[in-house]
Image (cartoon, rainbow, N blue to C red):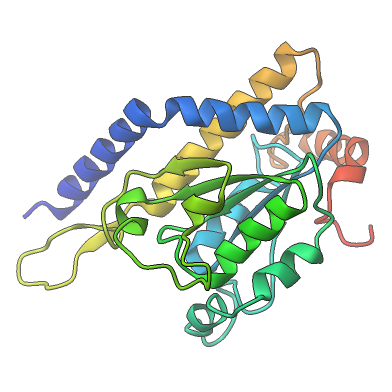
Length: 249
């Protein structure tokens, strides 16, 4: 079996489904990002465990917007040891509210919340509390997966049910996309790669919208290119009031 070819074919099929079904919502999300940037509001991204990798993908990123702030909290990132703790931590009641309440997030801001299953308590609490504070919540999830699973949140709701805009990564139940002969479990997850492509496309569209509206898009360039460091320092200085990942500098 050509497993590499089969996986890449699966990936291409998922991406085509995304292009066919999610483009309109990606444009809506881009519009919200552009509006937040143009009106002096803040942008955040959140996820638990592997879902949090996309929050990291979006910030301080070559070709990305300087304004996107990752929301990181103890016990939810893969740098914790043992990594299995993340599965326990993301089910804790009320922790998501604590996380949001300790972020400079409010009315007019935008937060991207990523969860393939969308069922865990922390993720749902983050979305619900963000909306309570007046922020616009963009959910990235797998609709096939989340609609087939019962919520672990006391409300009985999954992420897509408590968000303003839902982006479907068009992945399959459980995320593994490929059957290998002789192996019971499916392999070849698509959510991270597809999700990164979707969110980067949305951010790129937002940059175009900001520029078309007469604004100056806060875009990072590679620090490995000549002049990159200088450019990025200017971006960080210009938008410092909306960037919260630089510590006390």
